[in-house]
Length: 271
Ligand SMILES: Nc1ncnc2c1ncn2[C@@H]1O[C@H](COP(=O)(O)OP(=O)(O)OP(=O)(O)O)[C@@H](O)[C@H]1O
Ligand SMILES: [Mg+2]
Image (cartoon, rainbow, N blue to C red; front, side, top):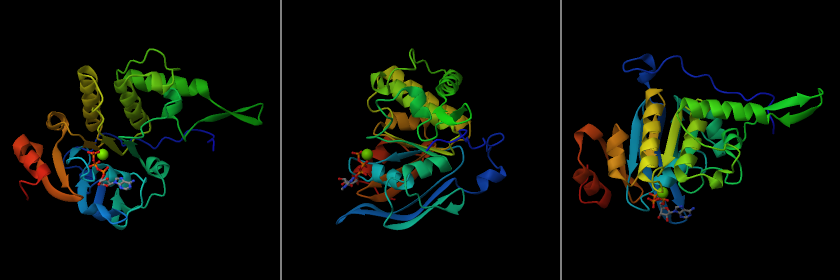
């Protein structure tokens, strides 16, 4: 469905600095969440909170339940138990688009952007602006989408030589950058990234981490799933560790070590 005008949620005036009223409640609260696939409990009574302007690393070995957890948060799956609170309200998303409209932008490990569309079309996906022609027909306002895309990419210092190229022709880092630009453009309230640096070269990894810092600096909290502990130590404020569907630990990055986190991930240590 075309909208007359793309409705961007208003950005908060100023950042949620420490001690401000906005800090009084978490942006996201997950309470006792359960998600099963048949007999398998992929997410087993997990609770966690994400506060304004913090980067939370979500760690765990393969199959720990990380992707399933964030898919419940972002509306891909319905939970089998527990509660989700977003900005203080209980929410239940019927689709990822519903979650996006509320301000939860997600970069999925397995389904990121629409490969056959270009960057502007991806940024406006599902929220395309339309303009009237001769007062009758509505058509996509492609020029507006292109200009807005150029503007947001410029702002983030992201360089994509040809914005009309389908996403599949872009590098992994450029794709991640487009997804992050989309989140910034729509004033995301929470950004979730599932292994955003896994397939990237070193310079592209650094760019993505820099964009994570940009999001935090703008007060947008980030949940970052990564197998790369170095990345997590480089940008996260706090980490949550999952193992076999359960949350087995939570640490401030400044107060933990790689060894301790690996121990939690493989089950040698427990809180
Ligand atoms: N759609 C599905 N149907 C059935 N089982 C699933 C489905 N998705 C995930 N699982 C199972 O749920 C468990 C958790 O998987 P999940 O993808 O959440 O793990 P993960 O922590 O993201 O792992 P990885 O680090 O490998 O991405 C695994 O045992 C997986 O096989
Ligand atoms: Mg995963």
